[in-house]
Length: 438
Ligand SMILES: [Zn+2]
Image 1 (cartoon, rainbow, N blue to C red):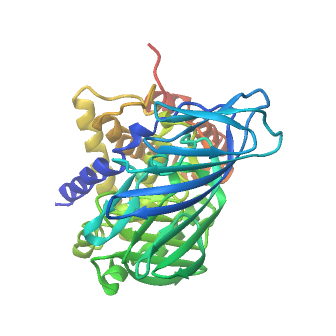
Image 2: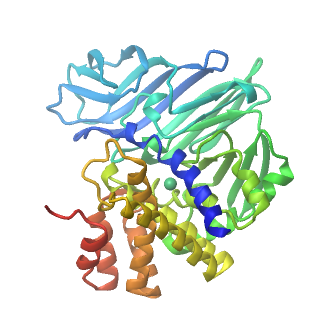
Image 3: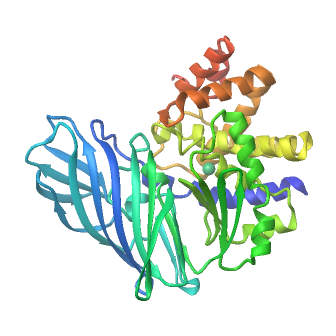
């Protein structure tokens, strides 16, 4: 029935989407502010490897004698820049000694290669590659969700394949048997939202207002892609209305590929078999809307550290139910919320309930992930019941507009909802969300 279908979808979702988060817990890089990344990447499908050169522009405090970036298991071969005195790699970080700093911008260039076990997936059978979440596994960067920067990526791929990446496509140029793609994201977002996908995809394209919508797969026909992603434009309209903020760029792409569900700036990857689920039941669009919701809540309004991850995931999960209510009616919404509540109660019944604000999101368990997604969404629903329609949605819009393009913590969310509604919500937040003392 409905519940088991949602739960089976939820099971896949949790396995994939939250699975690699723990590896991304970044130390605070207090005074580092990256302005831009410009990456030139070459992939080697047969050896499942890549080489890259990234130019990083950043600000750092005048007292700093070194700058530290996350580098996963990448092998760094060279770092150049007028201020660079040397570097060492330790514990998935690269520590770069600086001779002096510029008060304005510092520029360094890092050359590296890699063949990581996660963060990038090679599928030789379909000649496809895609990234998933752990950006420092394929590009030296600052992993902190609190550091927003612009991003440019250039990739040369075999003719006949297509490349989708964060930002908008600026240029393609033919070079013998390869085509070079240049994608530019000219607005700032956290590094975990950067990514790309390459493959000999079928592509269905349509427009919704001024937005170009693109759907890709190696195993689905254009007609199937059109059917699976049919509600995309309507979902964008719904989130624009609820956030009070237009979708951030001129295109949005969705790719059915591999085994993951992962939002990135301007596109999402969805598990390949998910296409069949939607074709068999056109109401099974929760993951299309969940990943799309992150284009607002997550990518552009971002938890400042992973202990407040529920702000990203609870809101995106709730919003997928809210869209279902809009599209299919109250019964569908109530069914979704009920399934979230049941997941939460199963965690609670195991004695593993925790506050939604975590002490240390370093090694989250499956139950912890269930809490941020499903207790998170359920508690947003309870807040809706507490406030009533007008105040709740007014508060969501106020919060979204106030913090669009910024990093937030739970207190920002509470204060925004209080300021918008004129109500003291401390009892609600202390009961359901905040860390309890003792
Ligand atoms: Zn999510």
